[in-house]
Image (cartoon, rainbow, N blue to C red; front, side, top):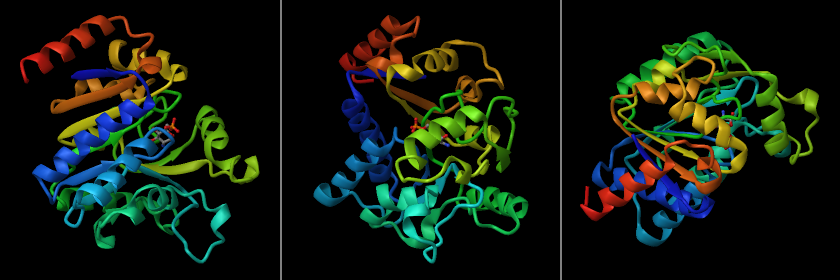
Length: 271
Ligand code: GLP
């Protein structure tokens, strides 16, 4: 596991975008797993810049998003300001700015009439696409990946879940409140890829910023693997793992001196 500590959010975002761009350049038809939240916005902005200014080509790329609120989706017939769906978020923050084909975009359908069936279909589509080459992940305030709240099995698959109070509070503050939406209107259920689904991605890129998440970052990377901090499953992954943190998020790591040393020595030897 490579743990990279960058001085701030901007540097974290540029580093993460470089990794994603590297996959797209070396395998133009790669399959990317994408995440939402405030954390990846800087990474997406840099990818958009690379597309516009450097010609980074997404025309053959396929994407699968981690999760979506149940009861929310990309329904263009609905009034825009009330739509805080992840589909809308992805469209606004990345997808409409790059040359990705509509049919190559997969986001869990929060408006599905048969969510259980949909979840199985989503799993099948990931398999049909040949699996995810690189999964981008953030970290929830309660240590979750996607919407895999504490108590989710580490082998879980795409399914419907109930959100914790903490997730509702965090995401209300970050997104719903800003859009002027009442607390009571926020969805309490979601569709999420499971931890087992995420662990099948060939490679993992996790980004986390800010001192608020420092304790959770330490638990996830240096604590025990536990279903109470579902992102701690990162320690079980067998592919290439890169964790990019800013100084704030890294501030409670016990072994940060070793991670910095490893990064420096790898750079020096071109590894
Ligand atoms: C939501 C998403 C997660 C994301 C998390 C962190 O819960 N389902 O995938 O990692 O928010 O969001 P933020 O980046 O805004 O802190």
